[in-house]
Amino acid sequence: MLNNIKMLIRSFYLLITLIVKPPSTSDVIKKNRIIIYGWYGTETLGDKLILLGILKKLVHKKRTVQICSIDPNFTKSTLLELTDLAFVSDANFIIENVEIVSEQSLLRVNKTDTLVLGGGPLMDDPRLLFWALINIIAKMRGATRVIWGCGVGPVRMKFCSLLIGKLLSLQNAVVLRPSHDLEHKMQFIKYDLALCPSFLCQSELQEYVKEDHVQRGVAINLRFLPRSYVPHESNAFAYNRSFLAGMVNFLRSNISLNELTFFSTHEIDWKPDSKAASEVCSELGIISNCSTSLYDVISNIRLAEYVIATRYHGFVIGLLLDRKSIGVDYTPGGGKLSALCQYLKIEKHVVRIENVISNEVEFDSTNISSVNLATYLDTSSKTYDALAAKL
Image 1 (cartoon, rainbow, N blue to C red):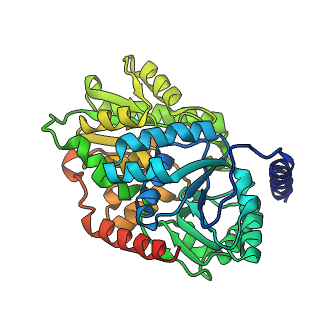
Image 2 (image 1 turned 90 degrees about the horizontal axis):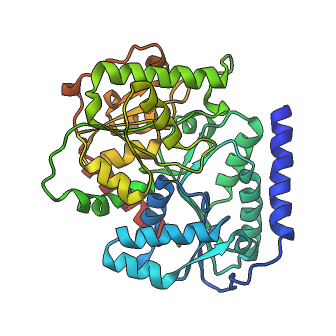
């Protein structure tokens, strides 16, 4: 109950702050826009690939696309990365048709606009209330509203579960990625299921592995776990220490330490992934740099034979680059990594964090291979094409 009250207060604070903030001179009111909003302004590498996956499906729309960001300058740097990664036709579309605006643009939505909640999770967060209120306003004004490939969870607060249900019910169309939370929280909501939009970037990533590179070693992505992912009976600090200690024991027992490399998909978290990598390197007594930019991470993984990732999109990038990938699911009881592997029918590619902590993970290299995603990618691509046709 107390957590729900705190969440409500934080939600209203967020909304009031946005409304009373002076308008940005960079925001131009236009009609017939596609307005993408979500976790932009603090993009992880996964968010960047999600955004490119969405933009690829909007190229043929020939409409102005605005990305609402809490930090427009940060998102502008993201677009520069994406134009380097994208194929020429998509890059030209991004340069000519995509604008970065502040979140205040959401308050100016009109009936010719389309709101796209693009990728990332719907979870316990105060932004849910803001998004729900914006969608109520958009519905009143006659704007089209869609959710594009979001995940659901973790959702532990009743207040947030109700908000997610309301947000989904306000949409004209919904596409969600596989999630265990869908099974018991969203059973009354109509939606289509597809892979995360980041999977639509496989062709771009594959350009980096066409050369005949020798694949050896293991590229590893680690993270610290916030309190929301720690079992209720556990101390968050002690739990993180146990997890990292378990990873150290696993790596010492199964991996040649001179073939370890590290990469990060999230450097703006409460503790960046590179910090977790640094602590593990210290325990192992090795020196290894941690790749953090999109290009450096891709370059790192393409040289590896295996990828071991704690982050969802660390695992996804490994799959897209045809590496033998293993995901470490850090959600008690199983989360989005387990849901993805179940959807792809590759359950052997995921291990549970409790098994890492208890040193019960067995690594059989002959049992892990690259994954053929062709059928799933084709189905998901068609699902997003159908969604784009509704805009």
